[in-house]
Amino acid sequence: MDAVKRFFSSPQFAVAGASNDANKFGYKILAWYHQHSLPVTPLNPRAASIQLPSQTYATVASPAALSGPSQTSLSVVTPPGVTLPLLQEAHSVGIPAVWLQPGTFDEAVLNFARSHFEAVIAGDGGRGHEGWCVLVDGEEGLEAAGVTWRSQKL
Image (cartoon, rainbow, N blue to C red; front, side):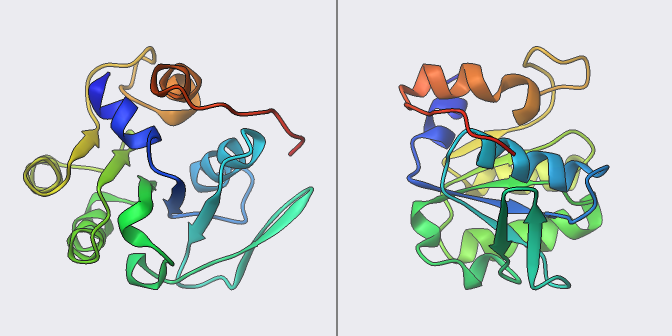
């Protein structure tokens, strides 16, 4: 739970793999941050914005384009082959903590992440049967980190 506390201690968040497709986890994860009134930036190199029902978010193409990456925790919703170069860039710009959603990593990704970030949430654990997921474990993580949030409409 220490990694989760560290992750949620950042003042900003980003979602790599954010999507306009409401059926994809990149959309659902972005929506979770929005619904919890957390400052979030979607990362998507192919879409200029992500449209939720109540708000449109401008995207950035990569971790290097974030304002204040050293103050940003990164949720990752990309396939393992995309995740490794994404994490290499995230590390190079000072992102301190990453949450690798189920299906986003392989052994090489985990090895890199665990040796280059202050906090890594990934793999076995959490309350879900597929491992740590912000959709399942996020609220408990917010509470553990002492983060005050308010629910807002999608």
